[in-house]
Each structure stands twice: as structure tokens, then as C-alpha cells.
Amino acid sequence: QVQLEESGGGLVQPGGSLRLSCAASRSIFSRFVMGWYRQSPGNQRELVATMTVSGSTNYADSVKGRFTISRDNAKNTVYLQMNSLKPEDTATYYCNAKSWSLSYWGQGTPVTVSS
View 1 (tube, rainbow, N blue to C red):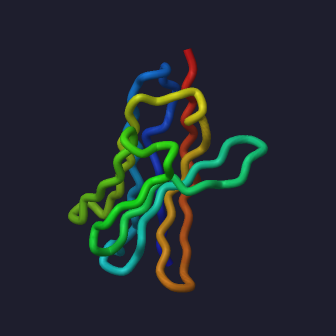
View 2: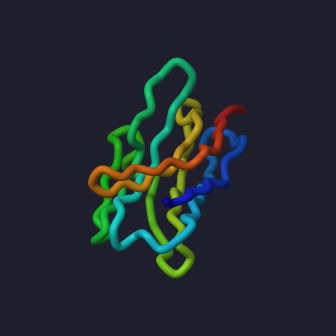
View 3: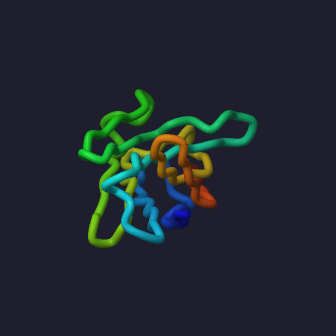
């Protein structure tokens, strides 16, 4: 079992930045693909960014060039640096760890982009 805990969400003005963190309960990055997803009211959960075991990254077209996923193996923590935020980035952001048939989710952290 893996517990994931997100933090770092909040209210930010358009054009601002936030950094989300996802702390895993144990060392998993060598076996799990880590991802950030988001869900806004009335919409399906969507992929934001992923990082494979080897460190390769993938981003949704809507966040390319603005968001960066990274990880700190020593801290068992994955980050999502979000720059140039837009109102349409408003959502609850979830951390995910996936390996074959296993998939773990955090509880989510809300992000609101508004003036």
C-alpha cells in the first residue's frame, strides 16, 4: 500500500505561480510512474503531467511550457511547478502512482486562479 499526500494548492492571481508537492509514504519512484491529474466541477479528471521511472516526462498540451513535473528521490516527493497560471487551470489537483495493475491516488489539493 502507498499513501500519497498532496500540498501546495491555494488561491493565485492569473499569471502567478504555485508549486504542488506530493509526498509518498515510501520509496516508489523506481517502480511507479508518477502523475499529476486535475478535475474541475462538471468535468472528467484529466492528465496534466507524468514522469516515468527513467525520468521521462509527458505533458498535456494545455500546460506545455508552463508546468514542470519533477521529483526528489531522497524525499520521496514529486512536484508540479505551475507558472503563468490561467483561470482555466482552476481545479483540484491529484497525485497518482501507477505500476501495472496498481494505482494509488492522493486526496487532492485545490487550486483556484482568480483575480
